[in-house]
Length: 181
Image (cartoon, rainbow, N blue to C red):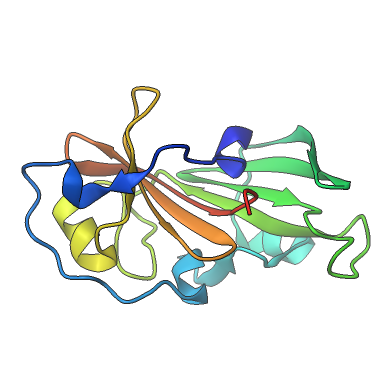
């Protein structure tokens, strides 16, 4: 799953150019910070939130946790941990600790992966929803049809939300910091 954190699309094209069975969609409003926030156990969890004991506690019962690795980025290297819960996972990292004047041991949420239809995005999209609902909520996006997978993504300058599409339905959702700019 660390690859999801580092994903870059080498040949993106708009979804409007590919599918033939998708209804016409209007352009949705631009992404904002709330698009990278979900509510879990009545608590908001967003990319960039501090990852500490309190955050871990409200996240629920952790199924497993593992050190994913240390990833070089520019002149620095950042440590990544994966925390797995029922229906979702969270990656924490000391990402940008040196640029944000934080301690090397301070961690933030750098990726949220959703597999449960119980957790919805701020625009109301969840796993199991149709591609038409996704397009109505987010607009056309950028399609990546590689590695035998189909992902529809939406970017801001530093963040990306991606939806895996299988059988014209959302099967997986990933919110992540972009590390490619």
